[in-house]
Length: 359
Ligand SMILES: *Cc1c(COP(=O)(O)O)cnc(C)c1O
Image (cartoon, rainbow, N blue to C red):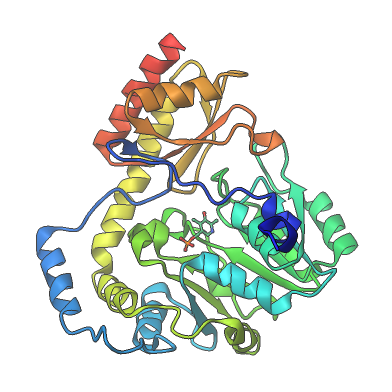
């Protein structure tokens, strides 16, 4: 039997998740925090890791880390918490727990690609309700109609949204939660870069879960996401979690980082300040239009047909960003730029000016 006979056709039709080589480039493609830690803090971290028992399986529930997260993030006391190897794994656990032929995952498009991918992996149908063409707002009528029609088991709402960077109307999200027959997962991956959150409201509706990650706040290498919500739901989702999904180094390192939260908060504050500077500078450039962002990246639209050339022009000048043109009809001519350090952003702006003149 060959792969063509055995592997599901929808899997054969996929391309594996592509990560471009970024060696030697200014890396502004993946919403990473660009800052490292002060030398003294790195020494303390290494000292904290010294006693981690690599020969033992990790704490299966990550108890100490859960306690640290609850405290640092203000998880309501009466809400349960579930940890994932990145929030990507939590999306997968949610999908696996509800999957059955004919069940549907619903989200808003253009949105985070893993909702669609994981639905496909788990054998669920995926419905992407289009955002509004002018500024990527949630279309409440279209979304509520799709929920009524499709009766989704899971609805994902990224708040702020990736790759558009905007926040959806909070009242519209409330209506979606109330109209949904299934779970509504509000994905707050970009919580460090906005003042808005639904985390204080978990528990207000029985079907609301709030998901976050430490990736965008500066710990992408650890792979740690968390899901907060009513325990009757999370206890069921927990059953599809592979044992020991959060490794010992991640548990120890994340707990350490949360004890030094002030350093991460300073970094995210710097990113927010740079976001404002970058947005203003991009606004002043002929040939690109930036969209306002509540995240650590800025979506820009180029003149028609120029996105590919600009992307390559930046690459030639040593700057890697993300080309979104071609991924969704509403993202025609769009590029996504992660906010870097002040120096990186200046390099990007210089490269962009130069590429805009030439291309
Ligand atoms: C980056 C991102 C994630 C993935 O987070 P990980 O914890 O790194 O897996 C989830 N949701 C959205 C909207 C994202 O942009």
